[in-house]
Image (cartoon, rainbow, N blue to C red):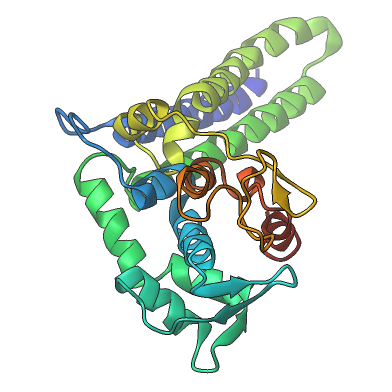
Length: 277
């Protein structure tokens, strides 16, 4: 009956790790009463809740590029055209590019993700109950890793127990007992994937509800240097009229879905080739 010690170890690991995961998931899903009620999200708030700090930086870069105040090249470099930022975030963009006025995009993107205006935006969304605090996301991720480790330990203890149990002494019964903690850990992982995983990214349940109400417009895809609906601006760099609904649709799609939603093939190529998308 020495294998019972292995069973106790497996059960303890399964119960402790599963309890921690449940506690972390509940904490991540907790929101203030009335969070998000009557709230309209700004474009940068949509970007943060959908993709985090990096998405906010991407949106700022593309928005300034569309206004001809930056130049994003398909080679993965960004160049300052207008050195006067109109707000704190734009000034952070220009500062991240540096005094030479030109820089590869990856370090600019990394600097923007940690910039003070982006951190302030995150703090406001967390205070409003729309974003998950960083500590809660970290706790859920750590708890999931612990449950995976407990699953491995259960399997290891089960194999060790079966090796010391004589075939005629009830290996089947021992295996059945080890199936219980294994089912517990696997069940918790399945539930976490279905329920907790979206909240461990950026948006809280209230933030997820607000994002779900946004209908992303579909910007026209450019074909041969012109927008798909034929109203390009003539220089081959944008759909729509350059400042109207086409540009707004593109920025909303970028905020919600990332670089893959950009209609401009040069921008998509720059993001895909140089920004890790």
